[in-house]
Image (cartoon, rainbow, N blue to C red; front, side):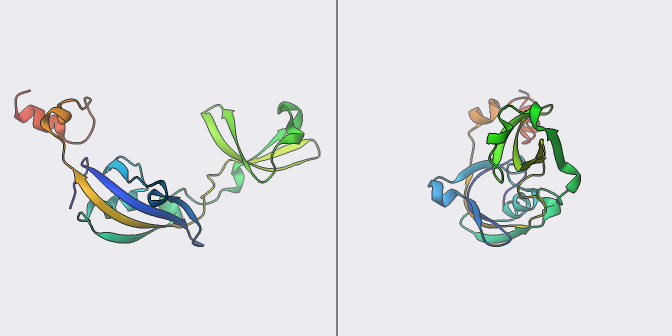
Length: 167
């Protein structure tokens, strides 16, 4: 089993509740390298990984409230088409990248009608349960030199090791 802050290589297939695959390390041909507890994957997945042994396989269901939350109708934003360059050419039903006050976001164009553009600001998986088929490939053992290079406050526990060594 692996502790929070430890690194691991993981293969997984991520699926929507209807079985549609949205991501697969197997298709990319390279396992994901992550630090357990870093929130790289949904918390339920990282909790499962923390309980696994190298070589173990496990299926995990992540309910929408632990993934991308419930679908929120109030996140439909209506903007005058005159405020959007080439609004008539927007790909209705598809996603675009749009600069917002909180930064660049992937947003769904719902419709363009009556001089208005309707954007859905929900995450595309909001309201959806997810399923992950996991394979914990291996734990990554860091050398003392690699651990020494961690930034202050990284959260892996190396600060305690450094303190105990008088570093």
